[in-house]
Length: 392
Ligand code: GLA
Image (cartoon, rainbow, N blue to C red; front, side):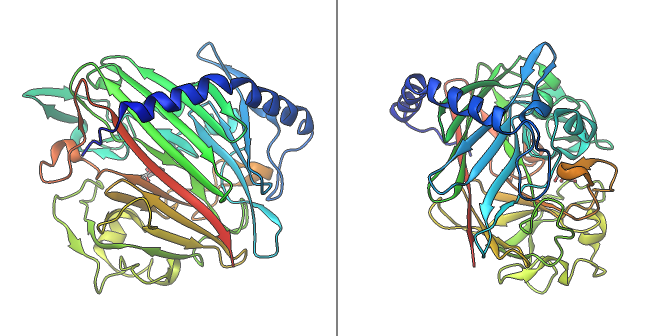
């Protein structure tokens, strides 16, 4: 279900962008000089110099957004990734709640984990790496067993996005995906805006248009540890999800097309529950995912009410997720193996971070009963997800 929203709003966004570009340029330059010697730990942003690179002939950088409460969000245009987010814990201490690498090289090494990345053209899996649209079959690269995961071998996570700093708390990223890129039809013009609000929320707005009928499902694959990057397991985090059902999967993690009730299963997060409480139960779905790696079917909701709430057991930091999407992939970091480096020179050990990826359901192009992911010429794909932080 693609939302087509008013042109006026879009025009206003563009206009806002045009006259405030300089402000952010200055602020990110200031940040770069402050940060040259710092890499690390839960309390600091990574060095801007770790992000100065040329990838595919394009310049990568680190951009810092700030709000009036001293909260800072670091984003790189390499894969449009969220790198760090410093928010206050229950004692007012600033904690980096984004778990992930601290340099372009370390992001490149850990490509298959999609740390912090914008995902496109299609979030999660498309079964057997193909789909049929308007009577034509499209073949995609298989990069996850027989399936296509997160847009294929070279998804939006490895593209260098064009950047338009809007003001000191807003960054606009764009990427145009050529007709046929990774097998998908249509030239897809994509814009993603990150906005850090004074309410300590990160608002991510996705926009896309096409010149041929296509499918699209964009998301943010940011990994969180609300106790801080490098603060160990997430199994004691408490999670609440406003979902009565999941889309169960087969052993290659493709939805069967059915909807399973969460009641009386380890997938019932309707009341806040520790993530580790049931993760090792002998449930077939948990075995397939090696833990939680499932799309939850969100109950009827609007952008005004959170559909997910996560709390860090040590920090007291709470993250509420608001979205216009019908589903959310809860991934408990099962395939993290300690092979790659996170900020502060620590390893990405198993389940030391988790992702809550808002989305249309996986394999929708092959599942007519799921909400549609089709986008036609003349329509605008437009969807917003908000991650809001507090502490108690
Ligand atoms: C998604 C998938 C997982 C895994 C991660 C990245 O969440 O559903 O199976 O591939 O991305 O490692």
